[in-house]
Amino acid sequence: MNRWQTSGPSFVPSTKNIQKSALSTAALYQSQGAAQKRSSLSMVVKDPTSSPMGGGGGMFTATNAESRRVIPEDVRGRPVMKIVYVVLESQYQSSMTAAVKRINAGSDNMAVECVGYLLEELRNDDALAQFKKDVEEANVFIGSLIFVQELAEKVVEVVQPMRDNLDAVLVFPSMPEVMRLNKVGKFTMKNLGQSKSVVADFMKKKKADDGSSFEEGMLKLLRTLPKVLKFLPSDKAADARTFMMSFQYWLGGSPENLESLMLMVGQDYVGPVKESMEGKEKVVAEEPVLLPDKAIWHPVAPSIVFENNQKYFEWYNNEFCPDA
Figure (cartoon, helix red, strand yellow):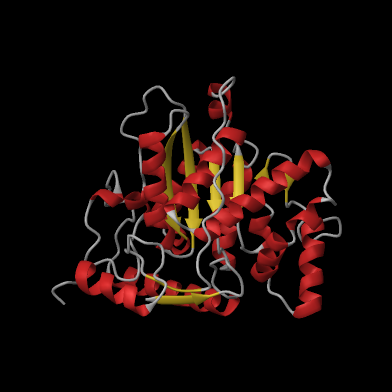
């Protein structure tokens, strides 16, 4: 059970919790590797949400990338957008899978194939090779909370050569070299950490003013977005808004938020989807669904978070472990 708190309406771990989680995640994978050496590609399921997520999952919803792969069962002549994502832990798996299934079932404009990797899985040679293959075939790459130096380098080594071929790259709070991979239309962070970066200047100012960490600075950037956008050329402002809106959807983390993120990025930036939608009316993006400042998260819960102990234990005792 994870209890995360933020200073605003968004839902993201603090720097201390990120570092602690990265260390504990690395230790867990190292202990698993010593006890059981097997390829992370040895178990394949077509749709992870269609089977029970009961015992054996531990702190993770699933323990290999193939169990996070979702392939549309019926494309129905629609263009397929492939998304590859890398996250620190698997709290996004359930929501990403649900969002993809909603689009595949209900959208007339696109179908989605999606596969996710936990950051620590990239230490495995087989997983890294499959990750590279998936990125080469992808339209969109998403990364979040990539703060382990050696693994950040692996991500950059794989994504950087394919960056120009990807329709969009969305990297949320991560190490600067990974953040520089961002590409949403004409909006990039290629100058992050350099003197000409508006975003970096904002981050540096917030750190000097109140000691904000990078991810805390990103949250504050969201709240002051209108002021920041006026410093961007007009042709980049719309793309910057898309990036910031994507970040809000990602922080919300619910199936509804992630569905809106994928629909927005698909119809505006993914070539085959854009071409198929010529002359059609675009889907109007829903406002991000905000989460409470304090909440309880469980990796296999149907709800993204529980607002209090009572709701959590009602679900845990009555649905998740009724015989415990």
